[in-house]
Amino acid sequence: MKFREHRVVGDILELAQRYRDQNADELVFYDITASPEGRSVDRGWVARVAEVLDIPFCVAGGIRSVADAEAVLNAGAEKISINSPALADPQLINRLAARFGSQCVVVGIDSQTTPGGYSVYQFTGDPNRSHDTRRETLSWVREVQERGAGEIVLNCMASDGVRRGYDLAQLQAVRAVCSVPLVASGGAGTVQHFAELFTTHSADAALAASVFHTGAIAIPELKQYLLSQHIEVRT
Amino acid sequence: MGIDVAIIDSGGANLASLVYALKRLGAQAEVTTQADVIRAAPRVLLPGVGSAGNAMARLREARLHTLIPALTQPVLGICLGMQLLFASSEEGESGDTPCLDILPGRVARMPASPARPVPHMGWNRLRALREDPLLEGITASDYFYFVHSFAAPVDPHSLAVTDYGAEFTAIAIRDNFRGAQFHPERSARPGARLLANFLKL
Image (cartoon, rainbow over all chains, first blue to last red):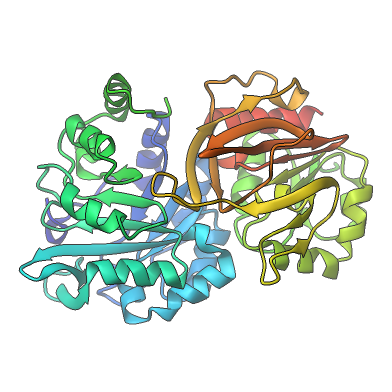
């Protein structure tokens, strides 16, 4: 399932608790339609999630200012993740890092393989506005780190939702210029895909959505499999 | 009814998760910078995110930089709050920010390497160097959540250490003062256990 056909998932509180009980290490709440429509995430739910969750969680979508980020962090989120707003106003990364510290500033990057290399895309939540920013992914990865990003989530668009595995070549190219934690997103379909991501050292963490939401992969089974492959995971 | 714990507001965001974690344990917490509330509290938590310089400036502004070292009840620093217990931190423009000087030593930037990116973000286990009521029921197989770029060296005040490329102090102790580099409020059941232990000190 690609972004433009993304599904509406059930009550987030119930999901949050389900993943907590399955030993997920961190949760990311994406409102991917927030940026294209020029609105911010509704934050009432952030405090409710923080009340029940005892693991870190990150909020992404429509955070365009220090004030937006502060509201989310004050409500109990560990980190905020910015994508389109960082492309529109790269200085936002500097302001967020200066105010809250790099450790809670995540920059999400939607990257597409193009004939000329890897390109950054913007507004991927909306098929009518999704477009190539003409930014080269590797240079954007360097820039966001210089500006103070403490973590990068790289969503490899060609792989996203098709469940044929993470884009290891692209992740390795990005990781070579990345000195902050790199989170791989897009492509997970089987437990083997997670294992190969870690055994090839292509990323520091794996993010997945649809395989968990649909129940195609259960987190406890995934962790057991990774352990059997001698990959250290929290159980 | 009095409070169980005073949470010192050292600036930065993200005190809510700590308040909620204490609430889940049935404890009444008050976020404050008021000297009389802090002095009277049976226990004191010193959390903190952001930078050492900003947090120390805020503590000084509230005149808490002299009050905190004089506290006699159990005190637990968390993350940056733990680092503030030390004599100084490399964090800050001068590269040497004076801190509360309750523990000797200097907090230093963690070296980044391709295998160990910084900030260090993730779940790690502890290696306890000695026994302490704070670690009651916590085992070598329990994971805790870390998010930090600076760390305290291992020294005689280290109660537990963690390895991330090199060993650093995960929990420090001196008398009634303890500090945890990780976030117990975000460390699932083991974190809740550690906070529950603190509430019993």
